[in-house]
Amino acid sequence: MSAKETGRLGQLFVDEKDVKFWKKEGAKHDHLHWVRAMISESPRFESTPAPEFGPLTLSAEDKARLYGWLAQALTEPTESFVESLVSSARGEHSFSPLPPHPFLESLKDEDPVELLDSLKTEYTRIFFDSYLPFIPPYESVYLGERQVMGEAARRVAAYYKGLGMGAAGEMPDHIAHECEFMALLYQRGELSLAKEFLKEHLLAWGPQLCSDLKILGKAGFYEAVAQAGEVLFYLEAKDAA
Image (cartoon, rainbow, N blue to C red; front, side):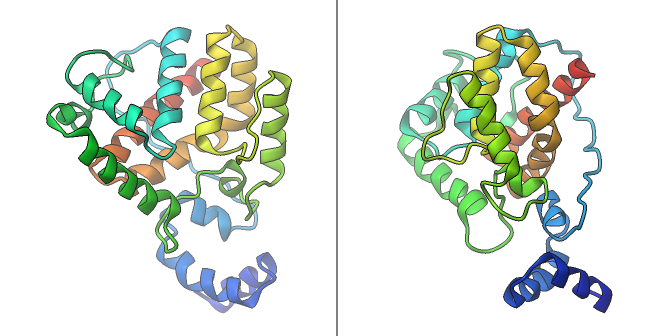
């Protein structure tokens, strides 16, 4: 990193330790969208590539189901969620109108207890590790506020409050909460509000988080989650245009 870039970091971060950290780690991990947002004065995301899939149209009911599934998939795995993954892979039900992902299909012979342990470990590695690379799943961070519970979080919380949905004790701009909110909007037929929230919030950073998750998820469960999110956000962006 050049002296000019180091000087710029000094303007972005007050603590010298932060400057040293991002001087080293920023250059190493700037392929991740959120890292570029952290070390940029005015972060502007490049458009993510259009995902590959066949002709597909999603109804409001389809979107509600898929957002609900993403909300569960992007929080710490639970026993009931893992059991639903296995039963879906066995053809007992379907959570999504999207083409099945090979990894999700492969779960039909998995032991739910072992799968739960495996997914918890992977979830921690991706979202709660102390060392880069990892993903902070918060809109405030992705929009370059360099903190959690920033202005984006407050604006998101205002939407929740307006619909009587709280996120007490939680980070309101966590990706799972925003997906849960979208599921609720579609379930209630609040289509205008859903379009507004997408434009103001979720489409401003959700595709980039999915892009990062696809990298860190490798070829496993979280890569499948990222792919589902990419397709959904791409279709939402087309519908909202």
